[in-house]
Amino acid sequence: MHICCIANHFDIERHCSTEFGGKGLACPPACSSPVYMASRAWLPQALSSSPSSHAVPVINLGRLRKDPSTRALVIQDIVRACREWGCFQVVNHGISMSIMKAALEAASEFFELSAEHKEVFASANIRQPVRYDTSSRDGISRARSFLKHYANPLEDWVQFWPMHPPTYRKKIGEYAVEIQRVSMQLMDAILQGLGLRSMYLQEKLEKGMQFLALNNYPQFSHQDDRIGLAPHSDYGFLTILLQSSPGLEVMPHKDNSWKAIPAIPGALHVHIGDHLEVLSNGQLKSLVHRAILNHDEARISIASIHGLKQEFLLLAFMVSPWMKRSIVPRSWLMSTTQNCTGEAAFMIFLTSYRPISSIKGLLRASRSMELKKKYGSAPPEHI
Image 1 (cartoon, helix red, strand yellow):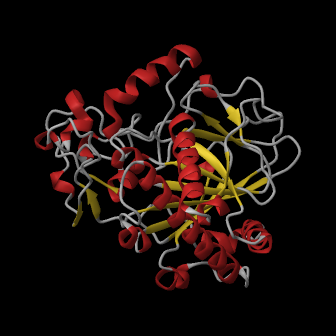
Image 2 (image 1 turned 30 degrees about the horizontal axis):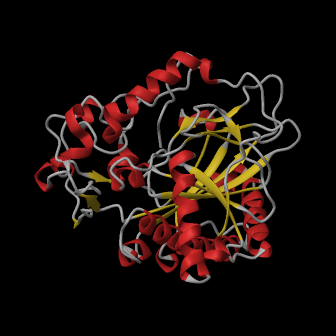
């Protein structure tokens, strides 16, 4: 199996125009479309009170550290969950309940601060190392406030983090380090499951991007939409989510219907991002998901997005053995983009606003058409 190559440079001029210019291969700035606002057709008709009978897979991560035969079985389960669902939950991951609880408390305490403390970080510039915003300004969220910042390596970024509440840096920092460790275990398992050698891309991922998004969703009131965050997929390789209470809903690949994700005590939710879809040549597909407001309580979530450094370009993707090397990297794009280099960089994902993620092209378009017929609108995709 051919493996992806990585280029340690960033050249926005080499990304060329395509009708599918989204979070990956971007159109030039002049042809970028505005932020996509979710249509009301995507508002849920009923809020799921419990997970579907076909519950999201739960993976015991501790079994990865067992004998090789047990590890191989766990890897098979993880890859199967990625293919069929695009997500799974992990337990026995090695992060203590006290660290997870402290992180949620620190997030909650930040959002409880006065506007004066929070507005210091208010910005619409997504390149800022720390950014606070609300649904009234970001044009994407239905009802949420959020704080986003980088976290890996911690010593490079923690100095930019909020100093209030006083324990924020300590609590969130401890959690960020632990989540980075878990992400490395998961990425190694997933890449092995796709046929790559053990610890493939380890060094680049260890030094790669970790982006924390702390979200505060208010309690649902009958005057508001139930959507806290519109349907979307994430950039990056993996997103690992910690949530204080239910509210996450996903659309598994196997049936294209919304499923509520339970907030299992001590569990972490993991889902596939756009760049892992690129790296796997479409073998794994990123997950469309949304946030729903709770009737009973406000909700805090901490999403940790993991991937390569922003300046790295994915130049080629995993290609089946029977495909000629000469068609890499355009093989995954096929006829969807006639003039593209096949490159995708994280900063392009962050700075592009298009209704459809670029490099997914027609391979995702057929799925979008099915969703449009069923729900009246294709899911928006945004940062």
